Length: 326
Image 1 (cartoon, rainbow, N blue to C red):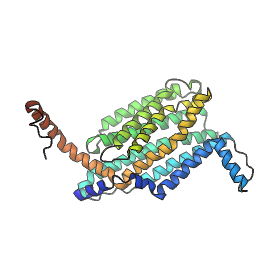
Image 2 (tube, one colour):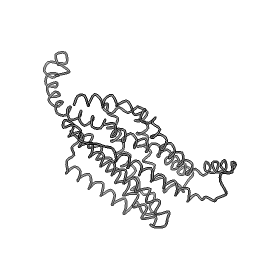
Image 3 (cartoon, helix red, strand yellow):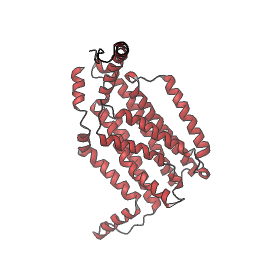
Image 4 (cartoon, rainbow, N blue to C red):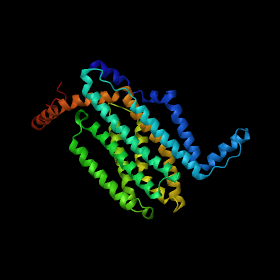
C-alpha cells in the first residue's frame, strides 16, 4: 500500500507533462482551432481566402447557419471523445488494500461520464433543431435537461470527493435529485418558452451549473491532486462564464449581448477540454485512487486527533499541546 501511494504521489506533478503529450494536445488543439474558425465568419472567410489563393478550394457558399451547425457538431464530437477516453480508463482491483479507493474511483467515473453525456444533450438539441427535427421550444427544454443533468452529475462527483471513503448516502442522492428535478420542471414550464427568453428562470440552470462546477473544481485542487495553479484559475473562470448562457436568447437584442455570448462560447470550449483532460489525467494516473485511499486514512484517524488536540489546547494552552500525535 505504501509503495503504491508513493508511486502515485510522484505522478501528482505530471499534469503539464500529460498535456504536452502529442496524443493529448494535438486533437485538443485541432478541435479548438476548428471551432474558432467555424464560429467566426471573418476568420472563416480569411481561411477560405488563403485556401483559394493556393488553388485548394473552389467557390462554395457557406451560410452562418451551416457554420453554426458544423461548430455544434464538432463540440458534440468533442464531448463524445471525452466520454470515450474517460470510460475506457482501466480502474481494476489491483490490491486488496486499495479496494475501497478503487471502487470509489469507478463510481466517480460513472457519474462523471453521465455528466458529460448530459452536457452532450445540449449540443445534440442544437443539431436536431437546426435539422428541423424538433421545434425551438423543444430545443430549449432539452437544453435545460442537459444543463441540469450535467450539473447534477458534477454535484454527485463533488459529493464522492467530499464524503469519507467516497461513500454517498442514498437519501442525500434522492433528495438532491428531487431538487434538481423541481428546478428543471420550473424552468421547462416557465423559462424555456421562446416568448419568455429573458425570464429570470432562464438564469437558474446557468447559476446552478456555475455553482456545481465551482464545488467540483474546489475538490480537484486538493493537495493530493495538485493541479497547476493556472489550471485551477482557468477552471474557476470556466465556472464563472457558465452564467452567460442566457445571453444566447438575448444576443439579438443588442450588440453588447451578442458580443458577450460570442466571447463566452468561444472561450468555453478550450476550458471544457481542459476540465475533461484534468479528470482523465486524474483517472488514468491513479491519483484519484490515491485521493480516496488517503481520505480513508485521514477520516479514520483525524476525528480522534482533533478531539484530543482541542481538549488539550483548551485546558493547557497551545504551548503544552502536541500538534501531531503519530
